Image (cartoon, rainbow, N blue to C red):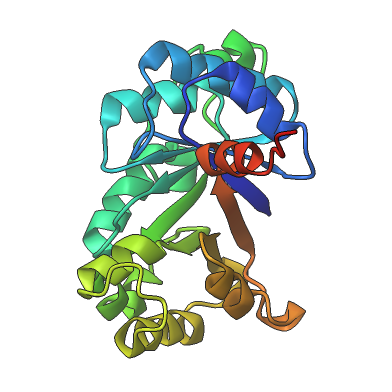
Length: 230
């Protein structure tokens, strides 16, 4: 699955991003600028255009998460999951009792206000591994029922004291541990740099199951930079 990050709170940006070969978009409430209305509007655009819609959260914000799930998103990325107990709480809150969770039911956009089966859909749930503590706890984290675990390279390098130093031996030792420990079909990666692209995409056999390509702001910046003035 191939996604990209959206931080600009505009349905027009959502429309442009999904008009591509990508499978969908991650609406980023961690570093983005969304309010409830713009978030809901972007969810509508992505889902109506039949692409996957994910939202990234920094924590278990129960009101906002429920709103997004009710709006019909396909999945959630939880930033900075560090322990089994933390991951289990996140998963249980987002899943209906049918799937072992505690999520309540209602007539909402997700089920077309009662036209579809209520209380059955299970979202795709993703834990982000982006700290030293998370990598040290990988074995127990893998026992959580996350569909994917996504590497957060910038925050991981920062937690190791080598922010964005992609050649750092310490950072690369932790990256190796992630690659060795997490099965490729459950591994996801942000691709912020050419080095990370080369590392994850060197061969098809090592390609992760989930890739998140770039960021809307960066796409715009690169487009502007490529303009050749006469």
